[in-house]
Length: 262
Image 1 (tube, one colour):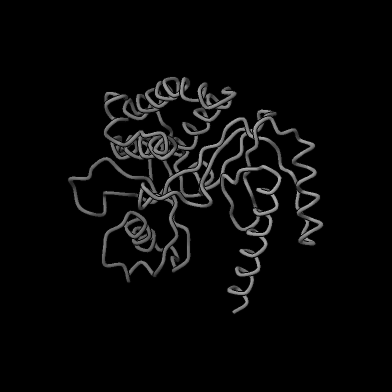
Image 2 (cartoon, helix red, strand yellow):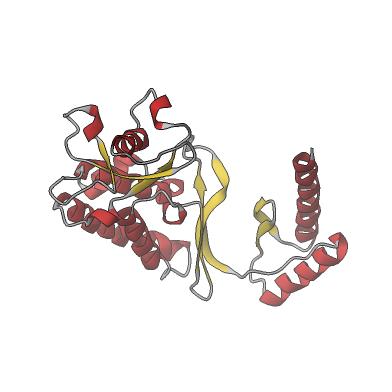
């Protein structure tokens, strides 16, 4: 009940704040719980500060002006690409500071090699001053992705950059399917480790997928240099990460495969 009431008050506050902003000539781009993204042609920072003051006065609610974006991209749902989501976006402020929410580099379960690639892509995109320049830089981000694909396929990625992390929803022996985290958890348990539901399991996807099931993944604690990693599994993760960033601009998996020539 407390959660429902809080959400109801939040929606009411957001609606009132939006109405005030629109009455001042601002266009509502996006809004979520505690934030509003607004647009107004040639608006000065002073106008935004004045708007914050008026909203604060009318609603008796503290509000601050975070900054003006050069550009921002709101991302699609992972489960339905036709639906935008509220809390996944990336953008760059006028001072060059990058702001990200909900993308792979912010997730604890992302492999280091994917995080490194995405960081480098955003560093390139941060040079853009507007949407036109942003689109012109996409070819450079494709080249960055090609570089990381080459590193993966030539075996040049260190083990620590391959580690994935997932939380166990149940005890290892209760898993009926052979997900990577379940396999790694069962391996740790066989080695005498204490493994329980709610624990984060770190693992690497291994190369010999044609072998027995338990060889599809290996706990990072048990991974040793002679054991090969599954290059194509990590290439797929890298490509999925790229598509996730650019899907709102019309880039789907098949188009990215063709562009990357993989």
